[in-house]
Length: 301
Image (cartoon, rainbow, N blue to C red; front, side, top):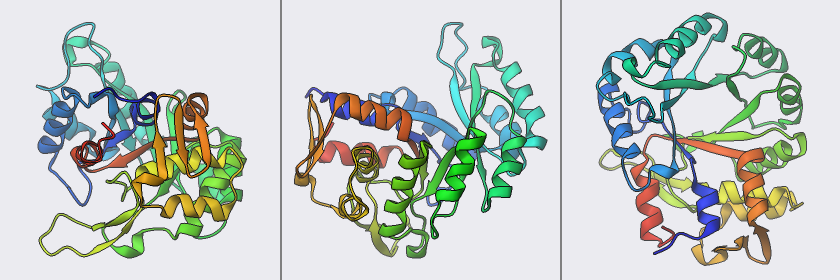
């Protein structure tokens, strides 16, 4: 089965692997082994970065030593570091990148940093500590109108991060809040990544954890979120964006060689490429296999 152009654009490099975090919460060796296997899989083109807390970089270096690519022409592992204090973490990030630019040490690069801030002042403070050259995402709250915070992110040259779920129903933002965030991100010209709760392509009720007897809750679909981002740039209203986010029917969406659509609305391939590069860039997931398996089940891949 050939993969439609729209699917290629939507999914390429889409999933940042967060196997260290709940609900998977693997140990370092297990998460790194999973990432290495995913890099060698048929779905490797969908894989983005390995997400690691800055405080665990030393642990990662030791555990990944046998896994990092060492051939001179190999593609390095790309890492995104979670940092609570980028000023303090700059030295270790620089040292890591300097060491692993040499193929004999194993090729890897930290090219992205993820921060968290609740106020405009917090954003300015944490962004000021970031080393030049790192793509910077700042997780912001979305329970209130995020327009002001997104304006600050635009001013400091950072991107936004939105939490789209978790291991409890309360961790999921309301449909109204998420639609408002997407609309405001487009209006501010601030790209965003999503994190948590996006294991499945389309909206539906799913288990919150992998534990036996886990509760279920409505989860957002990653295709819902990323198509909503593209459609927001075409001027859909907040009410319409909410409908996109809540649509669980696969038949309501089209994905083909000419573009993608929801209902009567269409995005051509240029629209999709713009959405992926300038609006909604990636999402973090503690599972890579789960999204891939669902896409196969739905015959999208």
